[in-house]
Image (cartoon, rainbow, N blue to C red; front, side, top):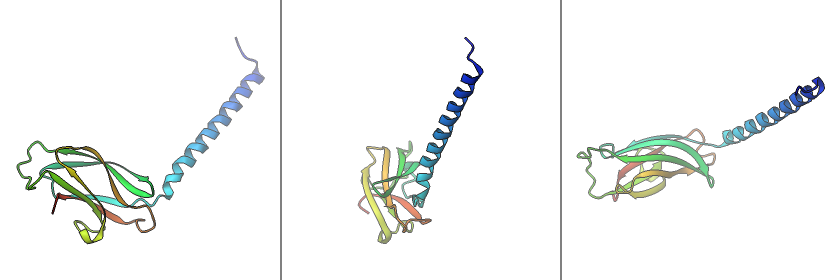
Length: 140
């Protein structure tokens, strides 16, 4: 059944209004994250003979910058010189600098997979700051 011309125009106006509201809402939602002060994060892996670290995403949780990663054990880990299965991961302002450490997390090479690492507070001190997520043998 064909709709009268006036009804078609009304439907088009409603659809257009709905589209405009949807686009505006989506833009507002995406712009809310641009005010986050997410730093530039570089992985420093002293265990690159043992572990492969892939970064997935950076997000804010409880006013903290968090980096989601996937960590797998490399098939040939003969070059791994750790004395135990423990790994230390810590964020810092300089590579492998424990004096400027922000957050630290220890985990076992026996239980790998997806990890969320706290990197730094989400405040003006991290804005445009380069930070490092360092991986070393545990108990160093």
